Length: 504
Image (cartoon, rainbow, N blue to C red):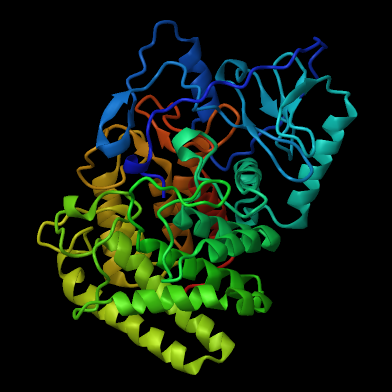
């Protein structure tokens, strides 16, 4: 996941524009149907830019939880990526000063600039060009992007297409963020331009439910190649597949998430033909998890999706819910994968390990209402959703805890903080956490709540309609865009409203 300790405020220089020749702008542009009269984030952003002298008071959470003022023109917070059709896919950020009045050509990652010219990355290239709208490369790029979308499904049928624009953009952004070698990047910029196994797992699930199994398999094969012999993964990887050597210890929750996504792909895509290839990865990861459990049935303390040293938790001796939840989902998923392969002994071993984790949860977390750390007065965080659909069967106690966490983490702007009494900026909402609450609601049949979350996410996209990492107090995006994890969660939420998602 994208959290404070893994993010910083490094900026990348805006991409310079290629020479342009002015032509009359084409009429019309993509529109976004809306299910209800929620405020549009795009018009809100334009009002902010038109208001002279407005001080932006939103803040960005920096590495280690420190805060810095939101820069007036954050080059790394581009409103979206410019891409093009063809292979390999490449993208570059659109400079913020060129975003006003720009829009994507429908069903593509090709950008129409305010003067009517078109920005795209030619097939097989990595450098953007600016051409006349009549240039044949524009039509080819749009046709290629649209054909890829048509190979699968843009989710949202249950909402009568009200979120089709957001879902289309999320899918195309995930495509640009997934490199040819299968490294699925968190985002495109500086300290975000890395592959975290946990984020990649959600991209696998999103590509699977939208009918793009080739992309899901590429990511899974990347993870299989990157896995250590002991079953673990590095905390993050470079785009070329090499581990990032920055002193971060491996993070145990990645084991559970990769196991869950492998199972999710196998059962959702009916793609069990891939199991022989992926089985060594599954066996190493599940064996490591099962061996790691202590006498109580809990895995060891480890950093989780907050990317914070476990010694800074309320209970530094025991794992957080952000580790225990994925471990339980992963062991259950691995046991079912073993059953599919006819590996009865492994299936029984991992089922037993999963039951030990489940029993430990009931003894150590449930009495306190499933807080992040299992102590009296433990603070709530979004990881309580990891114990509920689509990651685990529904449980009334967990459902009540999710409602409690959502209430304690809620912000006046409609989003949520990562956790109760968050140590970072108290006014900045995080889109992945907001989307996780929405995904749980969608997968649990609470349609109204899910739609409320989707409305908020849709209304707080960038001017190009891209999902950012964070949203500031003014409603302005306050983090990099696109963020792959949020895009994946939105696609899974819409898919869950269309049809039930599998639950391990």
